[in-house]
Image 1 (cartoon, rainbow, N blue to C red):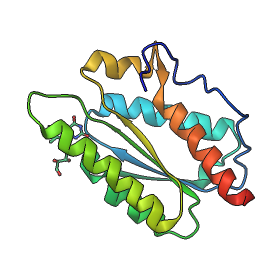
Image 2 (cartoon, rainbow, N blue to C red; image 1 turned 180 degrees about the vertical axis):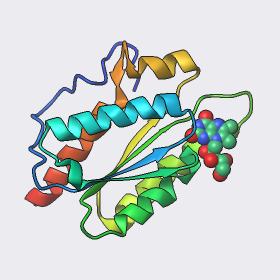
Image 3 (tube, rainbow, N blue to C red; image 1 turned 90 degrees about the vertical axis):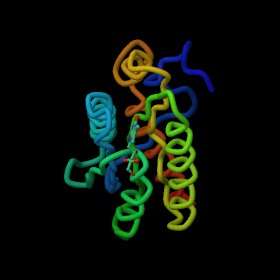
Length: 162
Ligand code: DLZ
């Protein structure tokens, strides 16, 4: 699971599907906005570079990562949207708040994905500190926003191909 020795933007495995005609939702958390803004830029750049039209990217923002689940659900309710990318950054603090938020959003977006039978991608950084967050949002370990976009393209293509 560790990304210490891995650049998140260099994805192993099969090729990236053509996103032409796909409609993607992005739900973006405003907490740690300097980090989530970089994740967002990476996700948009990767979607567009792989054929998704800017007009087919529907963006919504929520106050914090805890709210990503409901934001993702709002997007999933739109029948024209094929998949959703949830972007957030929860930084470890001194209390158990971190665990509650991370657990809630991980379980929450899994449930939304299964309920709507659509990919909802977990693009949430859970670093120990700001340096780790920067390293994974366009720094030395790449950008998890790119990775989330590629995962979304692969999962939407998987569903369309079935
Ligand atoms: C309250 C809180 C804290 C302490 N830390 C973060 C964080 O690091 N990242 C994040 O996305 N959100 C944080 N929040 C806000 C919660 O996600 C949520 O918005 C509030 O608890 C209100 O429901």
